[in-house]
Image 1 (cartoon, rainbow, N blue to C red):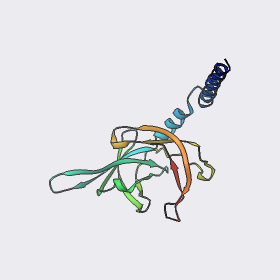
Image 2 (image 1 turned 135 degrees about the vertical axis):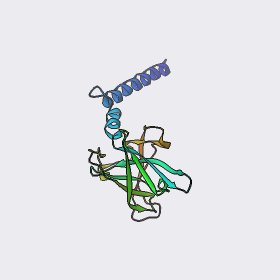
Image 3 (image 1 turned 180 degrees about the horizontal axis):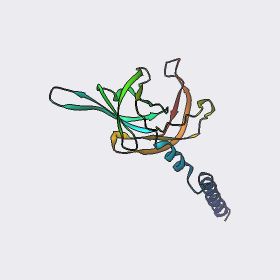
Image 4 (image 1 turned 45 degrees about the vertical axis):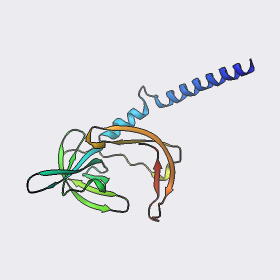
Length: 175
């Protein structure tokens, strides 16, 4: 009987914790992950790079990037920029040619620039000094150019340097 009471109490506790977590993430009638995703998706872009050959144009790389300033600066992975022609497609479907502003081979990061008179939606950059192991994170991208996807996880570790004293990487388990 005591075991059954413990089981029932644990079951009720799980239900209450689930309800509390659901209430926390749905405070204004909309899930906070949905709100964060909707706010951030407009800043995510698709990047393709291609090369011109004598007979045709071949796609060499495709991936995602993030607009981080209203004047057209975008951060992405360097490894997708294997071709000399770089195209950026915004979430609204508009396409732009991009220039490489800077690269860092050690971190696989590149900064691109597009020129447009359109208003761009730049990502809101958080203060990385205030993050903690266990904080929830979202990963938003356009893998393989098939459409925007969102996954979530937690911050697994901070201060990872991988042998580079200038890097203090944030490790997450978000896919």
